[in-house]
Image 1 (cartoon, rainbow, N blue to C red):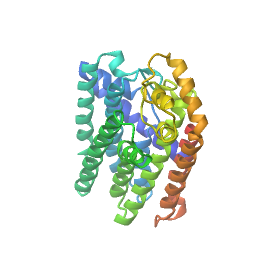
Image 2: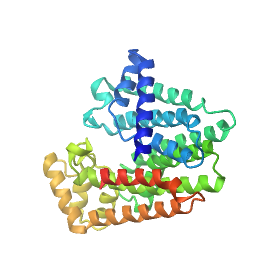
Image 3: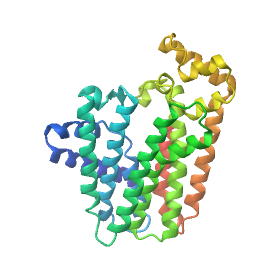
Image 4: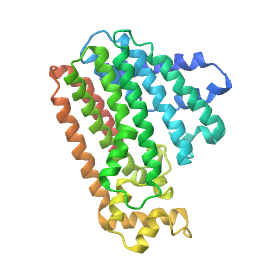
Length: 322
């Protein structure tokens, strides 16, 4: 665990320095605010761990790792606006603390700052790193668009939903690991193994996140329990329930029964979920993707000790989400 603790401390130190450089400029105050709310820092950790698996020279991976964390928080800031989310990590979201316009503009500034950091990648690695970052950034936006499109549909399939979370969530984890692997000097085959590992891991943990939104402890998750239900969001829970639901149950899930209170809606939708066993389905599916991720990690050409840091992070994340 010493390596993980060192990486986490390094990332935190670099982010604090980044915030200090931002100072108190109005457009950057919300940037500092969201970065200082904390978070697991999974994406920069994956970048550093991927680089560390192939080289002892870690410093070249630091700026790209921080760039990915800045980009991730940019997406959170804008996602919160689109979802009208009141809380992020237990604190008011940026658009709630300031306003919608400030959140949009500050998010745009974060995206620019991410690029300012990514171009500090050493020259011989910059072209593939930039290509990976650009592809990843566009796919994340495509995933968010699918997420919004799904809200107007009642026929979203489980496969479509998995593809949406692959784009919206997992590709950034995959991109983080691939960038680290590129900088570390990994072969293209090993880059792909790490990318595929992170994709499967990301899908698994996003499914767990969906589960915890409905069944978790709000004090631990920092989110409004039942928020997805109240927002009528499509999750694997609601999609599988809609496959079996009666007309009345469908109206309840999709939000047509608007006369009931929020607490009543959450309770009644959970009853429908229990009726059709969708909570167990989502846990099983998340477990399947988790096993796939470990198979991809096992396929790496490096020795087992080089994989230990990655496995320790997986275990750490599993403790926080299960």
